[in-house]
Image (cartoon, rainbow over all chains, first blue to last red; front, top):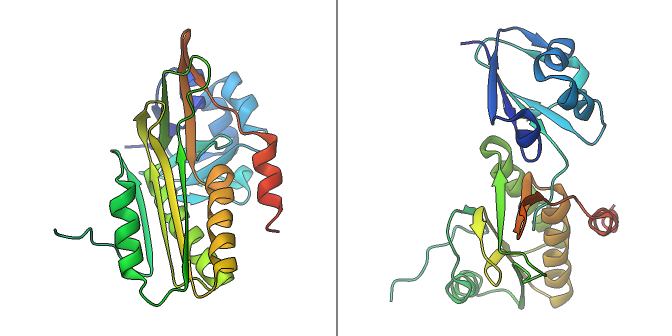
Length: 80
Length: 155
């Protein structure tokens, strides 16, 4: 089952797909390696957030995703 | 006529289809008979240049819970009798409603501020991503600096 990485908003276009499945467990270094250099660059920006298991991480570099977790990559929002 | 049923005091929704402004306001008004005033705001897709359509995407596990928290914080901060927070997702065309908020309070100042606070937070702190379809294809909308400044007013 692994870990499902979701690309939200403009990250979806950079990734070329809405989601990708990778083997568990997944930490920050593993995430950067799994998403490719362009998205890894975005992820290093403070305004891009990461959620794991429906919670936005206060410190994304402490990501610790396990089997079955969903990891959402959240670029800056633009609502209303 | 069967009236639209709202949950009280807070009615927070993500809508995949168009919203009926009149029906929503009538139901909100009826649900808050004790309020001294209701302030509402309706945001629409601006017919800007060659914008043909606008699409809003969200992330189910975060977007609606985040809007519910926002509504609760507005209620507590401005002593609102109630709030309505509705946001469209999906594809819209110019002239269509994107967002509607309403705040009911004992006194008008709280209702005005509550609606203003809700909108500033929906614009720059809700988990929503917007893209526009122009003559040459789809373009993601970058957050505006002004949205951030608007948000800072409440800190």
